[in-house]
Length: 501
Ligand code: MSP
Image (tube, rainbow, N blue to C red; front, side, top):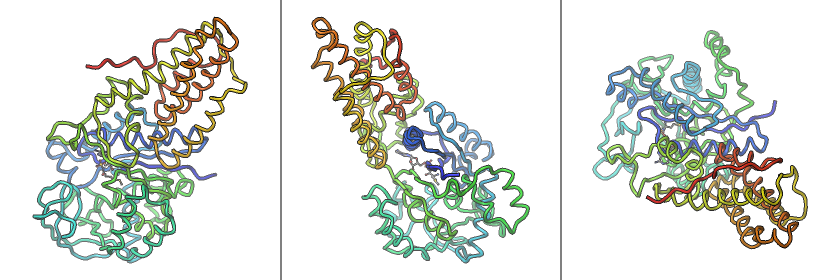
């Protein structure tokens, strides 16, 4: 059995329904998964929902339902959204799954035994929304949460600590020896400086939060939601059977529910996350893995954040973009592709319907869509039937091989914007060929030469249709169908122009 290409999104909190930000991460990973599958890799794409903690407890109470009912409802909404957005995930983990909870408990006990977790007490300033303590240097003036800009709460509690401080040197050494581990570079530097500044042990249990995984040996404590959540990446991969030998009962349960061989998946090839949770994935999670004696993931990539028409998305501003709404109006595929078009992946970006429409018209309607219609109409008149193979010395078909190399390299760097730039750029080259050679004029004087131009265009478009598939799976398939060998049919436009409102 060879190792699978194992890639993950964050698991999303179920205190509210998915918006364009969550969709962004998940679509990015879906694009990558589809690209890798096209290249013949055996991909395991994991996503899921993060369902424990005080915030979820509160959201459920506010709705007058039990946390379980609430998490079932919102988790289902995530699945629905991923269906609407055509997300090809292979596995969906919920932190309330019994198989996950058992692994969290087993890991906790293992680390307790190894001395990586110890009992102590904690007093500090806590943000209830972030589920995180902040120290003096991190909080804003006036003791405010740096993220929510609201007052932090004083918390004093008995708590178990994870010995994060023990891993400072090992982490720094790992970052140095594995320069590709944290990406992009400018975000990696922030992390490295943070670790160099010194690491404090991390409080990893709560006595006040009931909605969480109970510590097996001391059920007055529940496991801190982040400690619980990060473990999803290994619990979903089948970890756990390896550490439960001493608990026969545990093991029997785990064996029943696991089909995967952990070694076939771990270490993960990529954790894709948003920039605000990079630290958890770049510092805490690797330290947890070191404590467990497990290999570290190959890469953690932190992308930037979307604002909407210049504003941070928020309920109170009422500017939250619902991806399902955009998809219903303009199509899932154009939305999927748009998200990666303008903003270099890794940077922040601003979402506006105006730029969506502009890009739709320029990239899709005028460039690719128009090229396909023109080519097929002319080919119907001048060729009649499309051949299976297009052979001959066509400059733009040679160029397609170079473009594909550019595309593959861009995927390696997770530069989705560059992938699209290369594809649309090549579409531009094909359009230019039409404008320069004017096959409809040429057909009158030199039908063979006109035919050759049209074949070159069809060959080029077939490549484009394959390249577009990770971003626009449905439309690209339709495009491939229209370009199949045989008689050319009449089709409606692939991307009808959006009229400016
Ligand atoms: N539950 C944690 C993650 C645990 S992973 C072990 C969490 N969940 S979340 O629901 O808040 O989702 C956060 C993720 O959603 C971000 O990391 C990012 O991927 C995505 N986004 C949420 N809002 C976003 C934007 N406005 N823009 C881009 N992506 C953002 O954190």
